[in-house]
Length: 129
Picture 1: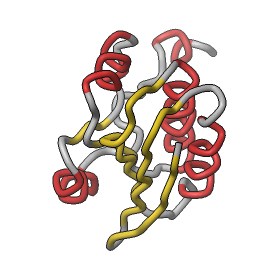
Picture 2: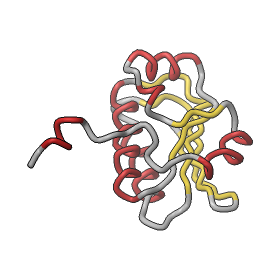
Picture 3: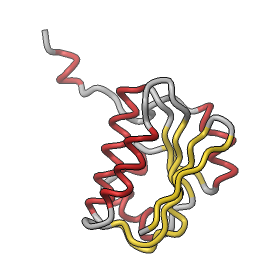
C-alpha cells in the first residue's frame, strides 16, 4: 500500500492506494496520527485506489475518527470503492463517517461538517453521576 499526504487550502488529503490490511495499516495509521492534531486542518482520506480493506484498516480509520473527537478536527473519507463502502455499511460505520463522492465534494463540504460528526456519547455515560 502507498500513502501520500498533501495539502490543499486548509485540508490535509491522505491518498491511499493498494490494499489496507494488517501489514500495511500501520503506514496509514502513522499518516493519520501526524495529520490529526488540535487546531490542525481538516483531514480527508482518499480510498479510490484501495482495492481491499480488512478489519485492521477499518479499525485504523475508526481510531482516527476517535482522535478527531478529542482534537475537534473535521474528518472524512471520499471516493470509496464498493468493497470499502460495503465493509463500512456492514459495520454500520457509513452512518458515522463523513463520506464524500470525490475530492472536489470533500474539499467543498468538509468545512461545513461538524467535527466528529456521528459520534455521540452513549446514554449510559451521560447518566453516570
